[in-house]
Length: 306
Image (cartoon, rainbow, N blue to C red; front, side, top):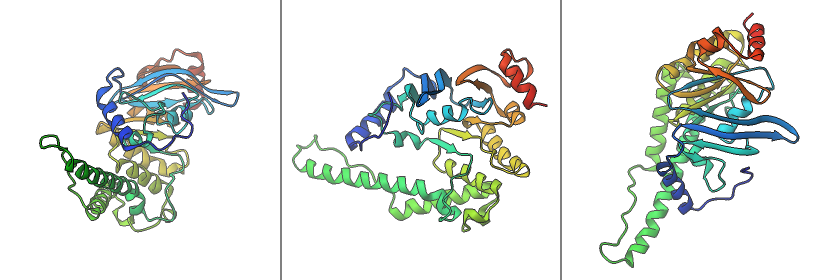
């Protein structure tokens, strides 16, 4: 079912979505796609793909340009609406129109080719924007619910009154915690001194590392990388790949579309080869790079590994 433009959901519906996350157990993989198809007009870009990505996996997607790699990645968090099929994240179908997609995207970090940092905000503001916005949004929702519960409790009998939602953070504390976490992440990548500068003054490698840190600030369950080094000068590629490798070594689940074959061989636990909108072959890096079976994959590797 195509998502299209989704109407605002009520708080009750959002609560149902949260319950769905806990209750649905049919799809046990962290991410699972079923019969995923994507068309742009008459152009078939993804052709009936079914695939699972387990918690802790590092999946590298390789293939020639135009094979559907980036479209497949963007369908995983429904940045691209599938034409048909289903995408399950933690057991919830993100293509279901009743699902609050933004609630689930909080736990799916996304890093793009072109960084997508806000040039009118400094580095610290770029990193804290989403955590602060969501923290304040949750605070307002909790206060609103408590307001109506207090009114309803006036008319409820003793023993039937509903407890108020605990509120343990102020607006200021939410902002301070987000900034402290951002500074901790910047310290990790050696860019704490860049917190107050603007992205346009930084190198491509620095901007991409900050884009990764921005995604990490939301404490995601999975990181999606769409060719994160393709827009970088060759000498800047290493610093970005090094950070991604650190995340992989720490157990982060990740799906990465990449042209860096050496990186895919070293870091991935599984490699998918895509061509013509299909996953033509998959396996461990040793299988894919050491003994490929698909003729198209053999031809592809013969050209990129020269």
